[in-house]
Length: 494
Image (cartoon, rainbow, N blue to C red):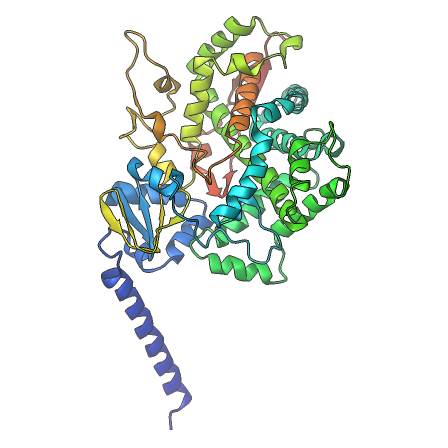
């Protein structure tokens, strides 16, 4: 009769044999075995999950491409393809690939736009959302944009009298307040610029996105779905309650009128379920504020690090709008801003360098497909690494890692020559699942960056470590700046 110690030994031998067999099959005999990749990533999803949890998956994927080439196996059934030729097939064509199981919210009763995998259902919901981002609709948000920017300027001027200002934190508050106004209207302002976020709404929103990224898009989506059912604290639930509270006054007949905010009213009158409205509102706030605040933080970091570019941009703005004065703080019109070469180049370069994410995943069709000249088996999770693409010398040279706004401007005689592939800039993705808010985001970026550079001289305080700031950027769906963007702001002619 087998004693306990013999049983334990047999159990461990069995587990070890199974583990060795699975790892050997994945590494040597899997249909993807011919593609190169780091052994620890090839045999298990947990290696990438660790990178995701640390917020460094974007840099890990780029390093793997630098070592192994354009097609890299990043998991047992996952491939990253650093090749522009596959973008259309993956994301844009009518036959573009489907989303994978990572886009599942587990126990959530609703299903927001971002998480809908079915193509026809996604198209119907997207059509509802599209109404909020027409040129006419975006113009209706202008008063909200001006109101929030005016409050931001007031806050900056007050804080700058005391010492260095954490611009990144203020950008979060500005963007969160703006999304609140566009979603719920002026009667439901979050007021973070005035009250400094006592309820930690920004922190909770970023944490919710990070939880989703860590457990869902972290290569082990089943873990996220399991945890979502357990009675443990989940920041996503807190945000759902916030959306519920602000939605109550818009439910029922007669909610749509001339003063009703477009996003909330469109969703409420669309006929989708209440749970779907809640999740869509949650997504609108999180995605709308986080992406804009992140790019603003990167833009002002790179500008402050490159004072020569700041001087040129101030000259461009002064030539266009005249000498700064209090009455001109919010007098910049979008059509004029959108035509300024250097301002737009600064934003494009900030979008290029400020997109720290590895890429959106898709699933190849059952019959398999040819991508980048290679056959990829059906059911494989594939993606194009955005961060690696944006820093590729094949598309942006010379110095792809350096902030060079002039790479986006046609050079005059005697000026440096750059090779710039504008089609390789994909911060918003594209195709049927692409970002609908691109034009709104561009309007926000143009307006706020121009306003700040036009009215302030911005420098780093003594001792600010620029290299440390960049090294401490993490991305877990939301981008985290572990080192604050502290700056000195001196008011010009205000």
